[in-house]
Picture 1 (cartoon, rainbow, N blue to C red):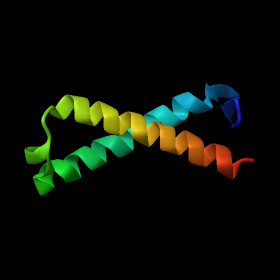
Picture 2 (picture 1 turned 60 degrees about the horizontal axis):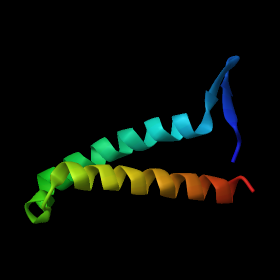
Picture 3 (picture 1 turned 45 degrees about the vertical axis):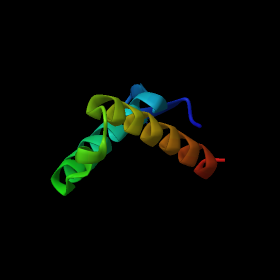
Length: 69
């Protein structure tokens, strides 16, 4: 994985950019799950949301690493 992303001379860590991107994706997925009524089956919603964020971030890092090799 590339160590940083250069945006007009400003270096941003790749993991930081992925974390922000996954946070936005997680927000969209949370809204979709809430509208679908999925959270009726979840015991602890904040814990589930945090675990979903970690899974999204881990998957995106894994996929990006495989793509850039």
